[in-house]
Structures are given as C-alpha cells and as structure tokens.
Image (cartoon, rainbow, N blue to C red):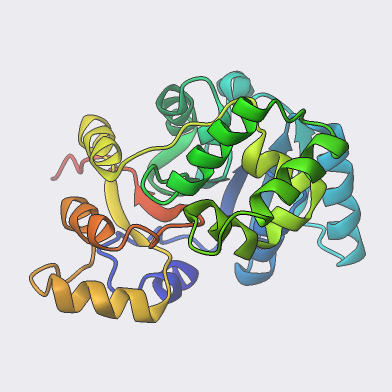
Length: 269
C-alpha cells in the first residue's frame, strides 16, 4: 500500500490491508521491474514468469547476485497461467501484452489470477506516441532491411541520414536505437499492437476495473492538472486522451499505469 501511495499520491485505491503480498511478474524479461518491486515492497513473495529461458536465466543471476530470496522463476505462457490455479495480490505486466496476438484477451487471462481488491501494473504501447515507429517500420519494410544484425545496422544508418526535421529522426534520441537487440524489438518485432486510451477506457468499463493513475513525471502531471483541474484524482482517461492528443509524445515510452480489481462485496450483518 505504501509503495502504491508513493507512486500515485492522488490515487483512489482501496488498501490491500496485508502485511505480506504475493506478486506475479508476467513476462518478466531480464528482471529489472520485478527486482525493483522486491527491493521496494517488504514481505513480498514474487513469482516471475517468461517464455524465454535465456531471459529467465539472466534474471535469476541478477536476483541471486543481489541476495533476493523472495523471487521464484518459471517458464510459462501467459495464456496458460490460469492452469496454475493460483491467485495474486499484485500482477505486473509491463511491455508484454502488446506483443501478444490479442492484448485484451491476454489481459483477461491475467485478471483471472488477480484476487478481489488486487492491483495490476501494466505497460502498453500508445498508438499516438509510436507514430514515428510506425513510419520507420513502413520504411524498413519498403526497403527490405532484414531483421538480422547487418539489416538493423543498415536501417539505423538510413534513418540517421534523414534530414534533421524528419519525424523518424526522433528515433535516434532513444537509447534503444543503438543496441542491436533493443532496436530489433523497437523496429523489427514480428508482432506489435498499439492502443489508444478510449480502447483501454472501454475495457476497464467492461471488466469493472478501477483506473488508479499513470506513472509519469511530476511536470507532466502538473500540466495535466492545470489543463483539467476538475479531475482531482488524475484518473479520467477521456481527459487524458484529450491531453495526449494535444501532447502526442507524452507516452513515448509506454502507457505505464495501475488498475484495481473490485473487492468482494460485503454481505453485511
């Protein structure tokens, strides 16, 4: 609860009210996000899963080196996770759902594992913020650059030679652009979905999830609050959609946000 309150001081969330929480890191990758959780949240037990054995091995080495005994690892597909017959207080899925065939179907599968009143942290690509990436992907496909190391180098060189005012040149400001593996994920990934805030808003309405807020810098939150002072909790997604249209690069990384599942209704006396 304290971690979430620090992240989202205005969030209208119901406290978990637990001294110990169980966390699922779905699509944990090389471990940075869930290792941060292990440091930040006392008495957390974490299950980190990924399809990639190489990523899992690296993440395990990192957590072992840091002496984090509270993390267990497992190879699994998100769509098959309900077969675990386990549930969690917190689920973290940053940067994974938008690479699945149907991000919303995968999100629903994860919700089956989230306990009533539990919270979820997600990272999803923004359609508006990734307009430069979409243009670069079309450019790469049109020029036949292969997704191997040589093709990635050629694509990077071609983009870097573009005029300074070309929108695609903005990609050269990203650290991911200069790493072969990260650039492959950025510009050559075989499957990528980009979402808009109204889509997320509709999904939350369908599932009953409460939006708790975005992880953003204080300067962005202050600009939003000044633009929409009536949204005191900073959680009106349709207002955020209007803000993003005015500032299309607000979520140039991802939409990073928290939601909460409804608690079990009280039966009363």
